[in-house]
Length: 368
Image 1: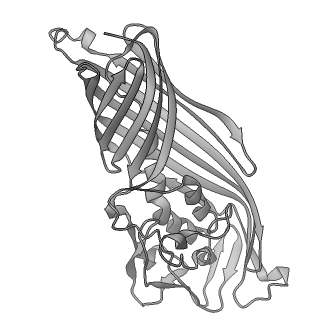
Image 2 (image 1 turned 135 degrees about the vertical axis):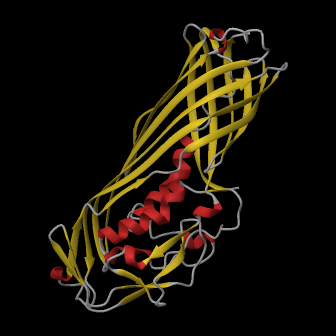
Image 3 (image 1 turned 120 degrees about the vertical axis):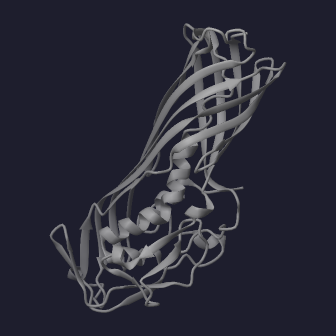
């Protein structure tokens, strides 16, 4: 299994890593390509390319946020508690490790090969031999600014991590949650990280879930030896980054706001057999991830003098990415071991971004 840092995903989005030093994809098997050159095509082209390039990583993260909510269908007695830590990793499917680049979708970027379309790597798509070029002699106007290109500038298409043949690759999502028994066999589950501020970024998270025993309301199955509940849970994480960078080719100063949300709604069944409890959950989930980059971005015009400020064109708030389509039907199969108050669990969720979750916790005053 291969895991990828969410901070690296955001760094790639922000002009080929403005949070860290240049793109570090080369650590995984090859040159990353001149990734920053994509931004010479203007914000619309850059946004479209990035949406395709980083979508698997972003949706892996948000699907990971939808996991780890439950490890049994049995609820707690009133004021019963559980504290659970889980690590969830959603796999980026093989079908999402390359994307179709169609020249007709872009205004300034083209393939040097002369083909009008090609399959290019996403973040985890490995290498490519494709060479791209900013269109020769074109002008492009956006937000009242005209970009002029007087020669072709060629560069290697961005490469991805060289893991295209690895069956399971994802972004790890750690979660810590508290469960509290309320009334009528109902549990409230909370996930919360107050705003944490670091040198160049901040992060906060809030999520809640409700599990309710429905078996008590269905005549005729009260004596069936299983536990049956419905569950609803939603989580939202927000992280903000600030950055600045200046070199000969480009200058940047701005902020990035990353948001990820995940909502899941399954029916959960389980059966306690001594200290061993197998469980299954069937339902749907909805995930969404967005990245907005705000600020001023100045890039050197082609064939211009870098010592002359007029040689730079400036773009404001150039990136606005929104990633959807990673949710849908899901089936979770797992088991829990309970040793006195200690619990250990593992499960696998079958969906578009299939997810592995493992964890441990403590549980008090659970219904018998």
